[in-house]
Image (cartoon, rainbow, N blue to C red; front, side, top):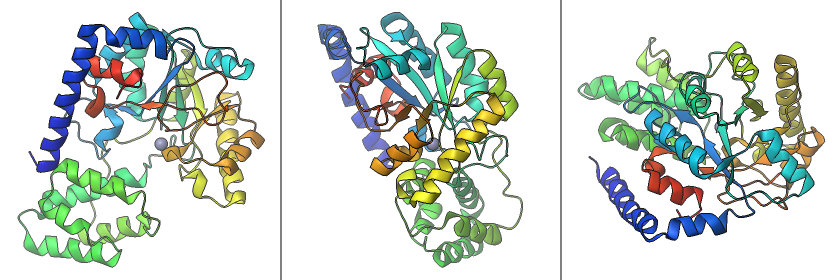
Amino acid sequence: MSRADARNALAYAAKLTVAKTLVWTGAMSLRRRTALRRHAVVLAYHRVLPDGSDTASHPGIVVSPETFDRQMSVLKREFRPLTLAEFETHISARRPFEPGACLVTFDDGWIDTFTTAWPILEKYAIPAVVFLPTNYIGTGRVFWQETLGHRLLHARHIARDDAAQLSGIGRALDACGLAGLAGVVARGSRPELLEAIRRLKLDPALDPGLAIAALDDALGAGAGQLPLDRFMTWDEVRALAQRGLAFGAHGHTHHILSRMASGVLTTDLEMARDAMTRELGTRPTALSYPNGGWNDEVIAAAAAAQFRTGFTMDRGHVSADDAPFALRRMNIHDGLTRDAALFRGRVLGIF
Ligand SMILES: [Zn+2]
């Protein structure tokens, strides 16, 4: 275990002790009665994958099927899961939520939403909404983070004991301004490598396409794609829509909306809306902002594109009086909420 992994494990254990104490003393149920008396909590999930899955997705967007099953059983017993339509009615009518109201959301439309999350949602009869980046659905392509992650994991695997390969990969990274990653490829753990890629999201100078092409040159052909790292097809989306799952938009290109020029922003939202309308036969009402990036201009463009609600990644609960395009969510992943006590604490805004 690396030092960073050990630090995370220690922080998790400390939080778990606090959470269990809050459950044991009754403070957690008191909090449930007060925090969610007139507010709703919106949970943001991304992927549901078994531990040890061969994926290049960052652990911060993954829960295991066991964790997800446990969490849905907690929601079913202790909270009041709403459909997207019910949730949006509260927002548009400014009608306070009933105690314990919650909404389950998924970003991205990964294949495991279809194969793994859906059967668990169906088992507990919990409604949910899935936000789709329309330019990726049914195309076989994935986000640059997973593509780059897969190349670097592959590089790490083949270059560990091969100094010549490693220096070739180092030169490729250097040429596209990613020299800092060479050390992580050579010596870092898998989580450290995925964390280094996550941090690149904030680097405006990064050209991910260039980096991926440079690595493909250095690695030769055959890196391929990881089978688990793909999105649903439109047929899979339609099959879930027929069973009652709701869908919203997550941009067209999945680029950060708040960094777009205004013409590009409008086009991105309109293309997402039109693709969903064409493929599903109904216009999407809800939008979640890729990477949680939003500002006043994004809100104006979303309203002009006829969306009714916009979901951020800002942490917090939702009041029916909140601005409809700045709705807060609680991000959920295994590193925060593997135990039920920590999940309850997260939902209630304690952690
Ligand atoms: Zn996303």
